[in-house]
Length: 405
Image 1 (cartoon, rainbow, N blue to C red):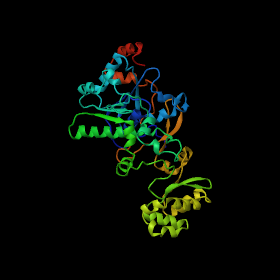
Image 2: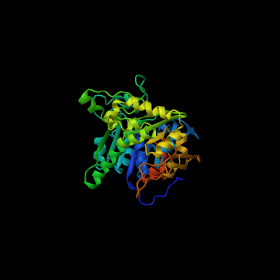
Image 3: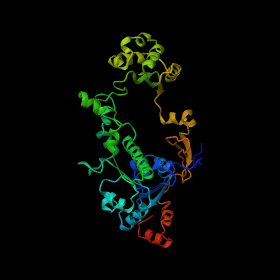
Image 4: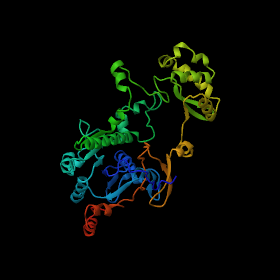
């Protein structure tokens, strides 16, 4: 499917919403990406010269990161020096007419530039300002530098990843940043709803990386509070939920989730262990958890002599949830991803053709779209400034001073 661009079937959900994005790398820009996919006009402010460092992260095609092509689609690039008084003045004029401002600088940075919440709220009472930082805008750690990896550790996630007794590992992607971005997106949408439906003013949304991680840590704190229990790393298993694990096949691993009561019985019957499926003490999860090692051994004994394909076919017929461990190649070739438009094709501004992830969530009446591919640095500087009322001479002067690019 060619998604460059897609034609919306109705007005976009966020059509008419103006977003100014000052963030860089992942947390702030992922929020801007999500809002842009559903119709918001996202103006991304980047430093002249280098721009967002994400432009040069990981693998480059035609001199630009392929990650950038996804993270910055549906955005306009304004190359503006926010460290200069003239650049700050232009930012204020933009923000005065904006609905949303996204930033992920260290707390206090915008205040030094006269762009803090109090100043901007007075300038634009309807403004919704999303602030993503390592530790939040308040508290004893607010001034410490924080990246997603540190937020994952402080939020409790890193302690639970990896094999018991071994070094904690990361999940392989910047999950702390994207969790913060998603929480920020939720906050923005709630604040916009409050402003429109309840007649409320704009508000500031404070998202800390570690708090976004902590928010998805399930019963971690209640278990400690009630029982003094500290959940530990458990490899591929899900502690306290049985059986749910990764099991070795002849050609790799398969994930099997047989922890529902009726599912467990079907699984045991399928692997030839009906005796376990009918055991009274294994009828509920509490009993199965006490014999989890025995159950994992029985399942593993059945899978080890079979291929992944064979295991999935047999368990699928028995209606037991199971799946392979997908690689990028597996995802790219999977017909289900294609059928749900989760692999789309687009052409970059350099003329390179590539497949990119589709859009989540899927709205029936106002679906997300890819209206434009990621911009070169400053592609939209002149256009944005002209929309603000600056003349060609004004723009030329700013460019000569190095305020814009």
